[in-house]
Image (tube, rainbow, N blue to C red; front, side, top):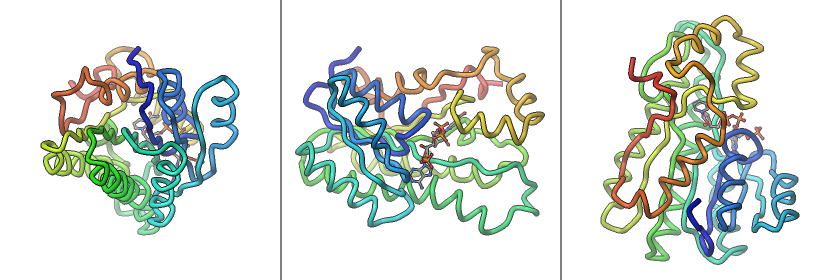
Length: 251
Ligand SMILES: NC(=O)c1ccc[n+]([C@@H]2O[C@H](COP(=O)([O-])OP(=O)(O)OC[C@H]3O[C@@H](n4cnc5c(N)ncnc54)[C@H](OP(=O)(O)O)[C@@H]3O)[C@@H](O)[C@H]2O)c1
């Protein structure tokens, strides 16, 4: 495992699922980790500290600009600087035909998944630029950022948007030593997918049948790629959306 001692990382949406697994892996690799979430991941951060790791929590709704600014300020105050961020916070929306998708539902998904990623990057990049240090940002897109799936217009629009932002901002900061990439997870066993299984069992079963590797992903399989993208081993990778999807998007 890469040694991230002395590094400081923010993970958004860190209370559960891929976010919590990534925060935990960063902590185990020696980084000081700020776990951010709209319900503060205090219990989760305290547990890491109890195990001897460096961690702290902050309440942050990524769709709220003041919260996001505070998240970065809190990180710098607590641990002195920033090196990496994994912008993970996101929500799904129920399967709906586009003509039946309400504007409120559309706005909610875009607000959290796309605006939330934009705001997170904006304040993280301000800090990294101020420090004039190298850094890495990983955004969370989805296989839904690479392909379409019927009934998922808002989610897929948001995740395609995350890739667009990742590529454009990566170009802006490439010469500054700040690498920006994204992961595009397939279907991962997390609370989000458990909720989808409960409400959309048949659609989910159809989707799972199409995964070439023949199983769902474990959240750690996403965390491993996030840490790799932040590590020196990924020093020449810029602006990519790495599919971690068991082969789904190569159909
Ligand atoms: N699981 C999959 O199959 C899959 C596939 C592709 C992409 N993804 C993406 O992976 C990311 C993590 O999802 P997951 O599967 O780990 O699901 P999850 O367990 O539901 O995690 C999502 C996290 O985001 C947080 N969150 C939601 N809205 C937020 C907001 N406005 N501000 C801050 N935090 C917020 C949630 O916090 P609360 O619980 O406190 O609300 C939760 O901790 C998401 O971006 C998702 O779209 C997941």
